[in-house]
Length: 186
Length: 186
Image (tube, rainbow over all chains, first blue to last red; front, side):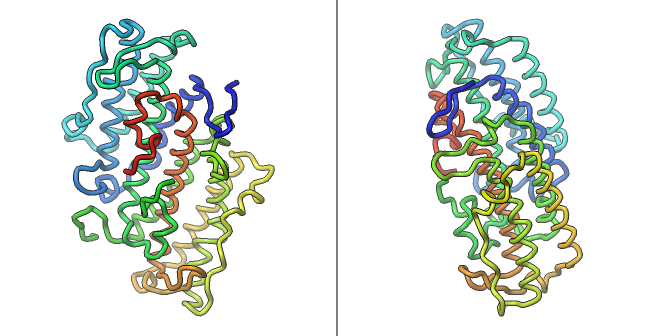
């Protein structure tokens, strides 16, 4: 059992991390599949991302980020840095695909990632292995896997925020109670 | 069709609002049902809420906030203010219930709320009707319904943030890329 800390942050648990990673495609599916483009293509202005863009970003992460970097780390340690991650790949790769296509593709790829993670049988010693991030320097496998979970949640938070943005000007005086609209820190 | 605005915010659409409101219980269900208490009871420290607390808050909203206030507004206009909303009711009402119980109850109540909303057959004229909030003063039905959607999304965002908090100290140098962990504004 992880040791409880006063602020309720808990030590990393691979089983608990995997439980959450496995759910993300289904969360996005029930949330977004079949919504109108007014929701799916809405963004927060400027170059900000829509829920549709976020789906493409998740897909690119499965292809090039999480498991490929974990493998690199376990094979080469810090001697061969990770490839750089392309934060804009989805604008090219998602072309011509529907949101439903992207949801299907993400679910399939995430399933494959977690199957491969199970095969890698990452134990405590492996969690301490180190790799080299091209910008951040040395990182551990535990940090990579914790970041995978936090990254999922970061973009689920983003989807909520982008969807809320659409009605930001319609909530009237309730604005002050809604952090998602007012931008007040948590 | 709503008129597109430069910042991609769009005029309120009851059909689109309802589409999103109908999904919230399923989103929470696939996200949270069966997760360990290490996830469900985690919070952000102090008096902050856990995902379990948020579920109880959603339930109390269905019982006392959205549809009851809409009805009050349509029946009494501004002459009879809304009852105050109890932001802490869930700490009493959720006692002894599992997260699964709360997910079931929320799904049932949300279904009833949306069925009642359909019966009320809110048209454009009704969206302009006014009521009186005990603290915010005059508000419109459109503002109430837009706030219902934004409130759902606000708490979905909170669930993501609370879950991410658990691994906040495990992500190492990636912290700077993760707004959900670093607290950087969007």
